[in-house]
Length: 541
Image 1 (cartoon, one colour):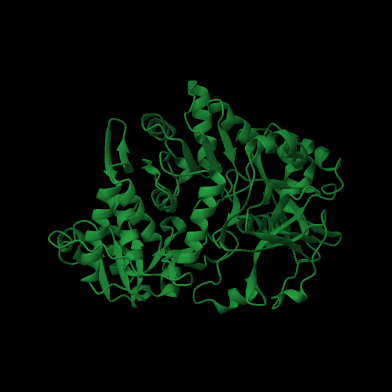
Image 2 (cartoon, one colour):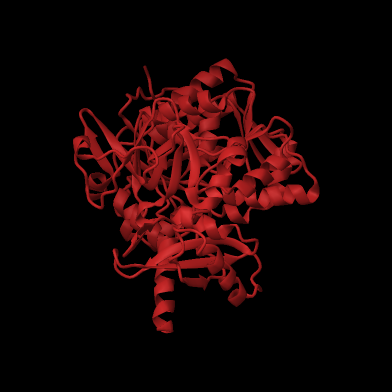
């Protein structure tokens, strides 16, 4: 069996050549590409890139915005057996350069801006021996993709990939440390496709509008149409709701994947304008999803529509999932009392356990202490969508992987527990625990106590001082920046003393706008807030 994800495009194109694969543009000006056309474009790029020396064992950094070229080039590189390197450009140039230097690409395929970036910062790119420019090369930015693919004969060959052959390196958001390159095999992608196809019932005849570029690849591989939205995927919280909704309506989109930050903006716009969306499924992931947001999104959907909240990480996605209706109807009232955020039951083929938290590497599974339902510990997972290793990072591999015979478990870096119904509850990142003299405090349960206040947009619990003696500090972002913070602080303390978890939180600080991750614009950078809070407390003493 050929596990190459590019083979799925070849199969879909042979069965449904005239169906639409990709739609791109803006209101009234959309371009369409059939599966046959996408396959033909991919085959031309295969031939052109092979002529540039690209093939198996070559690492190719792809720096192209969401477009037909992005999708076709990615499938072409998979077809060649190359390893595709994908890095979020919005992570900041210092992190970007650090990641490039660590992953050591052989070839850079990118738009002129990316090629100029390489010229300005040559040191991290020193491993690169070939360049292909997607756009005007001007003779100095590498071989022009348009020129090298213009007169070549299409090459429909697809590299015969095994389950364990490397397909891509995708970087984490770096929300709890430096971004890490995650090695994806063709087998991982294949397992993800099958899980998404079966659990979310996605396939031919459906139309996706993915706010995360990688999901456009999944959609086309599943035989669905992908509508590439007119937005900057690196800044989802700044999405133009009118443009996003217009393409949803114009193209009859049936499902869409995006971060809570996107749907926060889009749902408010729809309710303000009285717009009912045709979307049947909305998948929100990247950070805990508030019940209030789920209710708002459900209110914008036609009868029969549903919200899904898949849980996972760059290293393994998805591993659990839950419907918005179940959250709103059953678990959100518990979340608001400090029980954590319910993320659902393990998906088929996935094994999830709760281990006693350990701040050190655990080499073998027999050394793990498994906790019973109701006890908070570290979430670990095993299964076909779980990646085996970080790239060029043995220290992180040692910290995150637990050997179990011929298999292994991945440590999610998240804290949580199972309830008696077999549902998994998320309680925050392990690195974000506040380790006080009286024991650990977990971010998500504690913050929920304060987030119920109408004047609070969101909160972040951080620790100041040495672990084991940390002082808990609640950072608050208000709905209205002009609110009376002194009065609000008193009201929040009154809420806190009513719960045994939060009664010891005395310090409340107000921050105008929380720093968030670059991929989803939803995960709070608590590390930055902790540094700020430490400075504030030092000044007050």
